[in-house]
Image (cartoon, rainbow, N blue to C red; front, side):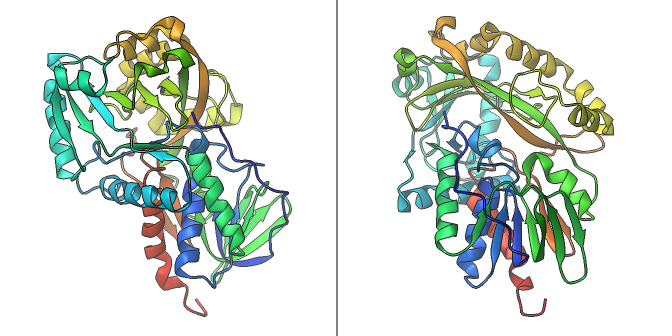
Length: 417
């Protein structure tokens, strides 16, 4: 798994005025700062991160997969930016000596009744021009992953793995080396948007910016509303927990082994992931969380619970996905239940192979009607762009999302604007 959040240097005070303030020191905020600096070297850019380290949240707590674009609706932002983002991520890591591996992914139909869903997924992947995609039978599964079983599978050889926290570290170092500031411990507590600038209040004072980009993950809806954007969609937190496989049993999987996803559910299901450091994990769970911060499965923060429960869409979502919610609850409380899900396609996985692993919070946008937002989503206010929904494949697509955002902002950097 990812070694976790990226430590950084001594916290420096924020400048009183900048051209662009970027709120959020995860992979999206840093990628956007990187792209804006590349296009406009003269801009004064400052990244404001609330935590004392970078990549504390989603960027440092995920499967580390560079997706190839198999799952996403053709024509969607996810489909387009995932493919472009994967190419950019492989190139960036190669140029900056960040360890990366094209490990490949098998998406396994373990039973014949899953074949129609595999057929539909193959059609979608081919519409998205996923490179090297091929369909294999049971013998082909065994050839690629000797411990996996199933009736058929899709093989995506260009799917890769990386430690996204290391990518964050490299992006931040590059920004600092080019004179831009990446500041820690600068939580944005308030936003005041004026005709010619924004005032961002933080514990040490105020930053005034001509333009701002908000990549605040689980806090994105609050800051968007503070800047004048609509309240819909609201962020609801899902806790994703993993189990680690003991070192002696890491040879169970060479790359990545996933189930055929249920198209009625927003998540990809329990899978086995061989990470860039050679470790192997099983997960994640997908349990509605009682706090925006990772930790124990049933950690509760009163304010966060009240915001989630008070949103009209929450009760509608819970009712709509009530059966899936019961399954995820079993996964969260029972190591055996999580093992049993993965053992459908890697049956030699044993309970004794598993130890407690890390957990993270997925920030998922939810509409007032109770619909989980499937695509990437953005809001625009007079002088700001707000990333409102960027779950998986957000990390894969981060450098392409940065291009997308920079295209929106490019025309605004003329003198006097």
